Image (cartoon, rainbow, N blue to C red; front, side, top):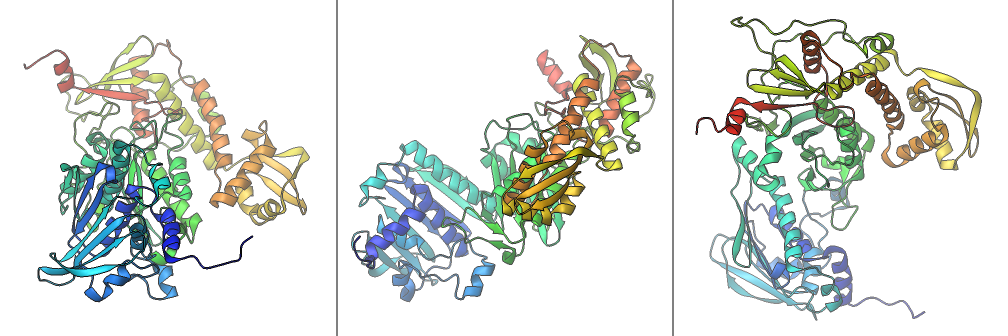
Length: 598
């Protein structure tokens, strides 16, 4: 091997560029973050040829002083941190001090800026090869413009890995969309080859914020999104959560921001996935735009060069907070449930959470005056009621009676032994009776189980399990948590565990694999819901077999009883498998089908 030697400046910067500048969109991300950190409230982005020919970002931020210009393009130079302690409370989007130097090393870069109120500013130019910075006066209003031309002109190997112009611009547009969702107070404009793509004004009212989300995520998302506002222990979660019926085939409408920074985090993804588990159709992905605010000291954003990943200092608390907040919100979504508007920075998030126009699935109707759900029955009572409805609720009132119409209205008839047709104040309600009864039975079984705790059954012969020393130490440390799950586990050696008791519902399952999965979750996520998921799967199967079957004739009283139970049951908008249980056709939609009023 050759002897160790220092890299020259040009090569060091190009290596750093490999970490920071992956494609044109990476440049836009770094420049937008610099503009936002500079206090800009108006940013213009111009792109040509998908970013290969030109990338220009212009802002009205504080600008850069003349004396600081040479350092602006130097590595390890930044105005955003000064001491080691600053890294523990990073409140800016960028701070590494390598982005501009890295971009300049693989492009022809011109930085024009003005830190005063006059019209005269200064410009710094650099053209990749020798990294020499040329300074000179230039006319410019207060703020900064960074112009990047001929990206990767001196590194052709990098350039040939870029995709088509359309693809590269799509990545740029996605970067701008994320920043637009993170900062409603900033006006943003994006042009491609001289054509305006996005022209977003700053948002100061609830409706303006809602309109921006609709423009960037689509009006259908806003129409079928639930606003959320939750706070606990220094954590605050707010934003919009898509209804389970507004799911996607891909995870392409998921935006999560931590202190204004868009991130992709495994812990966050796990918490969201668990919250949707009971209501999402198999293979589908939820849609959301969520914001988590916490003390900067509680999150480390310096774990990846692009800062897309973060590390929470108390990951378990963050996970539990996210899961419980979203899980509770989704559980409350049943026919007629009210939707409270949260706040954005102290102001109401949305004056009216969603238009009253009916979405494709699941209607939104006024809350009726209904009593709270009865106490959870015992498991035996639930099983007795699985095949028949005992308590019959009143049928529809006689014509002329003054009475509030419940959200799902009153039954009219049964169609093909599968669907219940009902009339409410808005129009026609269609209910899949098997899917609806399945959810009701499933929720009652879960309530009965939770009220009685997790019943455990001792194994006739304790099961011995060979694990790593790390897993054995974890199981010993988390013995109390495992016991709460119904697993009594003892350490029998440095790399051996004994399983003595298991949950009754899971006595026929693969206990070894279940415990291994639980320990793997605890190691990677800090918590596990494997046992609960497996137990829920058993209860779901029981509920499915116990629900009313197709072609069973129900009386009007039985149909109305089912409708009232749906209104009182959590998550009744979806069956156990995530399929919708009901839908609505408003009178206006019915009139449209028959061209009435035209």
